[in-house]
Image (cartoon, rainbow, N blue to C red; front, side):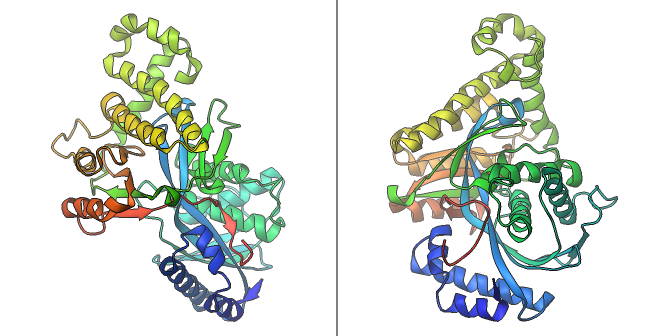
Length: 435
């Protein structure tokens, strides 16, 4: 630990440059930008909580879905990856069993009394509920908690499908683990932090999310998650160096509205589950694929054709998520790109979540995909990601086409719509010079 003054001096002297190169990118401009960003974060802490407090730094990344679109809710298999956008927290422990948390860009200072570890009325859908829920989950796991002051800055794009809320949750979990549990990775490993974060979001925040977002943010790198037993998901991790392939990861915001899409999202899950119910099962993962395929003629009149093609997407997409992981592991990047394109087609054609049939005139996602295909055909890969219907698409872009691709997207959707990222091989961690 260091005082805020000492920490700023260390940052200015480049003592954290090696860590920044690992977390973000090794080019001098990125390292310099992160050095300035962290100094600004420490100064923000000093402004709200006092000068020369003893502090530590913590970071948790956002995430992007790579494969397994709309499979997790039926206990399927997904592939996701952490990205080099993150939340950074400057943290100082206190002895009053109270968390005070301030986030840049938000007016409210969250104050959470850790003597109260049950959901509090009026706190739902606010970040204080996530802090309280994470603390409660750590205690239930057998860990220790205590008070701290934290100032956070985040460049995880809100509403972009990169999971800013999950990054915040797992960052809070990493803080409690680091400050009060000696960074115990046996008691509170990254998957446990993810499960605790999901619990906080489900029970305290009031959002019935799955576990993919939190796991990807907590673990880092590229991972597959098998949800066959959702209480004990199987996570496989693999390092993924896009830069060595001379590729960038682009997330493009099509600026579509997510309003009035709840029914569209819910229909995917309910239709997949309606197929499973025809076999006496709750979710598709419990239904043998060959048994399902043989029963299609009878299923059509029971559940309708859309439910059937969405079920076909589920089985194929689970296989594809596993194959994507193997392609990265075996360093078969051409196969990886082909699988990305196949998954994108499956989401569009079979899962049918590229646009809402309630508003067929608004097709920002298909338009962005069409632009991507025109620029990248034969050179890269593109797909919709996340819930779909509106929002963002993902593309893997050769570096020599990057400016052309970014210009083409920005020309249609506005300056800054295309965000250039990379995969980050670290999850929720303390940030130290020795990383």
